[in-house]
Structure formats: structure tokens, C-alpha cells
Amino acid sequence: MAGAAMAVGEAAKAAIWRAAGDPREGLIGVGEVLATLGIETDVESVAWRVLAGRYHQALGEHPVARDAFEDARRAALAQGEPLLAAIALGALAGQDRVDGRYDTAIRRGTTALTEAVRVVGDDDRLVASLRNELAITYKSVGRFDQAEPLYRAALACLETALGPDHPELAATLHNLAGLTHARGDQRAAERMARRGLAIRVAALGDDHLAVALDRAALAPIIDALGRPDEADQLLQDALGCFERVLGDDHYEVAVTLHNLGAIDHRQGRLDQAAARYRRSLRIRAGVLSESHPELGTTLVNLAVLERA
Image (tube, rainbow, N blue to C red):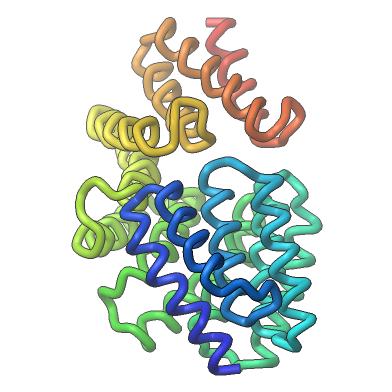
């Protein structure tokens, strides 16, 4: 079992650093490794299949990502590797969330976490990653009281295992800051978000995709603190990276356009806000579906703007 965990950790480290902020480059690296392994049910192959799914997911290629996660889970079960099977199930739960299947995402995420704790105990780094994934889903459906203890347990585990400035902490800090923002404590949210951003810049450089994601997440917090110009600049910087690395019609582009449109709306730039809301809707409808719950907020904002 330690070998399975090591395969995941080393595969993740190599692929993430090779990618240098571009999921397409990450996929190339994963493909090269899988070609050398050649055995579909090999334990290390399973770990790399999960990573391939993550990169497809980052590129908005959701059906391909789901297939990769399902293949990885089947192979892990066939090899008698319950930890890897739990990791693949957690990845599937994350894809369920992306697809708007929130009940399924919670069920699968809870099962994956329970199974991983059974296999490796409560304080393992991989268990922390599953807690983080499940907390994202709870936050997405407004169940903040269930999300927060999962985030905090994940963060405490990673700080103990890796130290306070390790890059793996950044994702959980990013997510916990978003939850704290949603609960209205903007000062605490800013502290967490800036700590995560500083860790990522130190580890990955200023132009990395993960740094752009952190900037985009910090912007709504800064806006809520009454600094719209600073928030707008953070979003503009993030948007440039997303369009360059991910393309003009990616999900992250749509989210950033929505947030820029909201700032424009409040600042009275109604025509620009409408254009950004509409482009955001078009992208998200194409990536997710026209009936996905996430479109609701942008539709409401656009309706209020059109009335104005």
C-alpha cells in the first residue's frame, strides 16, 4: 500500500512540475510515462491515469476526464489497491460536482474519504486531498458547516506533514479563503488567500496557471473589502493567463468574465458588464450545458442589469 501511495505522490509531483502551468504539456508528459509502462492494470499506471483525468478536467474535456477516472478505478480494484481506488472515486466525485450532480458527488466523495481513512489512517496526505475535494462540493451547495471542518482538517494535516510553506498547502488555503469569503469574514479570507498566493508564487513563479487561479479567487474578496480597482486588476491579470494557456472558451475564462462583469455592473459600466455576462453565459452553456445550476447567478445578474 505504501508503494501505491508513493506512485501517486511521485507521479503527481513530476507531472505538475513538468506542466509548468499548461495542462496540455502535462498530458504530454503523462502520455509518455503511460507509453513506457504499457500495462493497463499496473499500479503506477493507475496513478498516472488519474493524473491524465485531472489534466483533461482542467482543459474542460469532461467526458474524457470521467472515462480516465473510471478506468483508473476499475484497474485499481482489479489490482486489489483500495487506496488508489478511493483516490479515483474521489476524482469521479469531483467530476460529478463539475457536471452539477451534487448528490452523487457527495455520496461518492464521502465513500472515498471513508475508504481511504480505513486503509491509511486519518492523518495521511492523500486523505487530506480527499477531504479538500469533498469540502469543495459541500461549499458548492451552501453546506458551509460541513465544508469548513474538512478544509481545516486537511490544512492541519498538510502543515504537520510538510511545514507551513509547502506548495501543497496552497490549494486548501485558496478554498478555505473562498469559504470564509462566502461567510462574510473578508479580513480573514484575505489573509488566507494572500498566504496561499505567496506560497504558489514562491514555488511556481508569477506566470503559472495555479497563480492565476489564486489571483482570480482573491479578487472577489478584495472587491468585498471595497477595493474594486484592485480586484479588477487581479481579474484582468488572471484572465490574460487563462486565455493564453487554456483558450478563449474555457470555464475559468467564463467565471472570470462573470466576476469582471459584476464589478462593471456596480461601477455603472453597464454595456461592458452586459457584454461580459453574455460571453460568460455562452462559454459556460457550451462547457457545462444550458441547464447547469451554475448559469443561474449570471442569468439573474444579467436580468437585473437589463432592467437597469
